Length: 223
Image 1 (cartoon, rainbow, N blue to C red):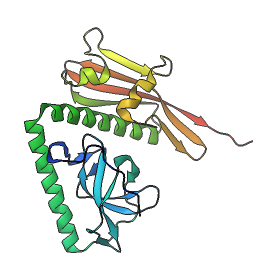
Image 2 (image 1 turned 90 degrees about the vertical axis):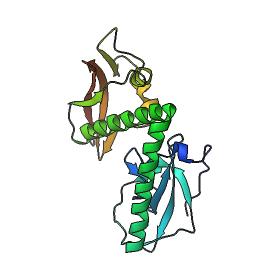
Image 3 (image 1 turned 60 degrees about the horizontal axis):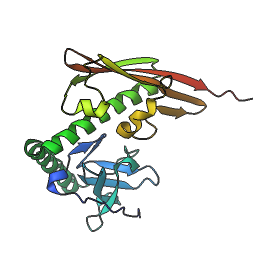
């Protein structure tokens, strides 16, 4: 059994979020380390910890509760065949957590700011992963409307002095995005090939935020 990781700020209604970094409450995922399947029942926006029931013999083990960092979960390789009753329980959890997230967004400014920051980070990381996976040397994408209340602090610029900011190996500031995007966001290893992001440019034009990713490929040739 996975050792439970204690959450320094246990989830309460005020810091619950329905979805984060591709993981959604009421859905099934597995641990990258051992393949154990977990039904996620709660995600803590503040700590990025998830709580859930393990799936044993195609059934939800509601007598056990697992707490773990969200980053340890990955998509299922083989979905279990749950009973109709278990499927209904997960669907109910999904509905409840979405409703709670809406309430939190409507009632708390701090929650809205953190939610915005994490949502933008999740989308950028997803697009970078897509670009590296497809080996796009240049990949541009739109993020959406610029939120000066949150985005200026997140990226360290209000885009008034310049319409863009750049993070790159050449400028030696690419690691400034580590805190926002997490570890290993800029690299993809595949067999003897390494694809990595070399530059991220964020641009704000007419109140709209966009990004351009440049990447490079390094191939190890066997001697």
